[in-house]
Image (cartoon, rainbow, N blue to C red; front, side, top):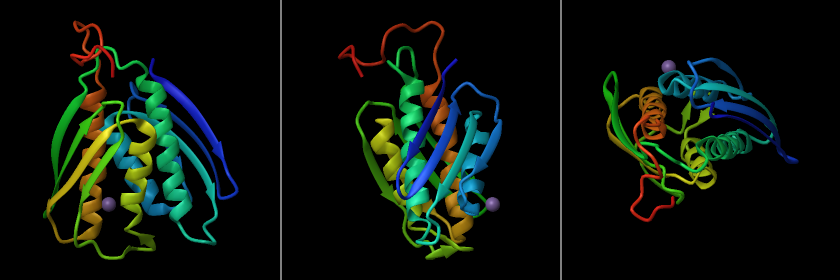
Length: 194
Ligand SMILES: [Mn+2]
């Protein structure tokens, strides 16, 4: 089973996280940031992972360190779960509608970290959540997961819907790209290594 637990403690946050790539959508998420909990719940559910997250962060400063550090630890846990990448699908591109919003998420589980984030027009806040932290979260994730991730907003009006379509697509794309094929052997690269 591809299941890993990662802890990370700094002067800014303490994060405990367990990810199971072959889960069934079991969720226990408390980051201290309500909107991020909502988004990680959608990610887990649509990825059919299991995810447990506990984050105690310096919310008296703002939500930045909590969002970033949860991204870091999720990335670390993903990298450990995916291991040598033997037999995985590797690529996935999915578009996800959420009412009037449509976004596309493309993933390459490449061992190389790269984020392209083309999302314009979000309001500064959704509730008390700083929407610029969406990019910070995905930047932290890609750096530590060793994946190439492209996120493109096609169109949309409502910021809550837009971010929701992105997190659902992130879960769906990651599920497809990390799926293991029973009849494939070796890593999916002509170089023989990922
Ligand atoms: Mn919602």
